[in-house]
Image (cartoon, rainbow, N blue to C red; front, top):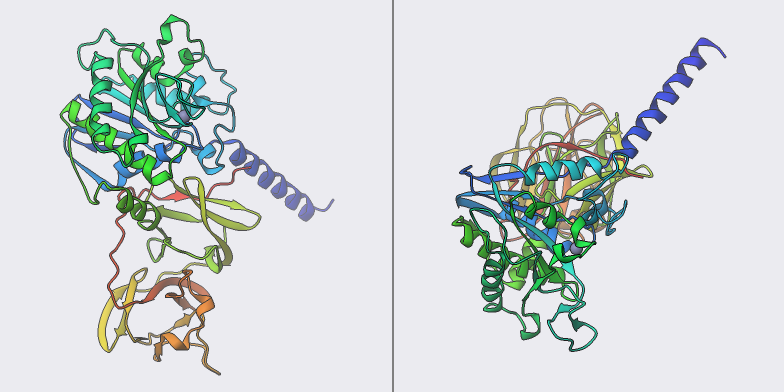
Length: 457
Ligand SMILES: [Zn+2]
């Protein structure tokens, strides 16, 4: 083995080693603190089981679409994040049975320890664990899906009262929650009931649960169940009704920027999503995005850093593609074009329908008829799906929608196109043009910590 091969061999070993390290690491959950710390915090937990999207969607919406105007709310929207990504109840077993005893070797150990620690923080006075359960819980048997054995559409308590100063009457609070939800039912069948599991009287399974751990640490805790028989946006609707009433119980006040109504909620969940890359010089609206995006510029080191408008989003690299995940959904896959990334002036001059403007790279431009990019020295412009003989730099040309091939659009409706900027061979940023008469509303990025693509086996 020559010195060169030895070096290569060592490098290969190192690569394999780091990949293994990454593969065995379960991603951390997010904690989003909202409002003003006042020692009266509501802790909302979503995604303890990865296949219960009503629960984790509701928690994430509290994080992204609510403003807490009085009081304090902490949100963990994705407790069991890798099970969410894999759409599994629990990749390493049911996490909600890991709160009494857990081996340090369990892959969930770190996340369980971290959430236990949060639960025990002095500020935290109430904890809501969100679930989607099967069927409809009924105190008396009606039929298979409506019976005492089902969990859907219920508020779960472990016992009627606990010995703490505040919020100690669990039964009374849960009755208030169900009463409030039942005033706002979409259908009569959806009504809520309180279910007391009487855990300490010998429910061995429930003794291992998060809420039971919490009440034994002197915290008021409830589980809220929506029904798996309902579509996700309706489950979310019921969870949010419950969470708003829990906030009322604690004197927490809020505003939200959508109507709490089944259809409006579906629109928010499906369309109010976006992701950005390369210091916001590339932004992808994810509503109705194509399943596969080709030639997506990614840094040569293979790590794609991103900012997501929603904490349930992440990027997983697999088979030389970068999959964008949003909760249980895989919304798109990016096929990389590995490039060096360069900086140019962040602002570029454009003409939209004849009006000259200076815009920031990464902007989504609404265009009615045509657009034009002003030429810059050393900067090459590539409009994806547009081509003209012998033209390599597509700045300085007025372009309308019928000159771009629809199959190159970013979205399934064929309206949004990529305009890419290069400095020599290096990628420098992107504009999106949206052929649409109406101006698009920008999607807010509330939790804009930059994160990096993951490798999960
Ligand atoms: Zn559950």
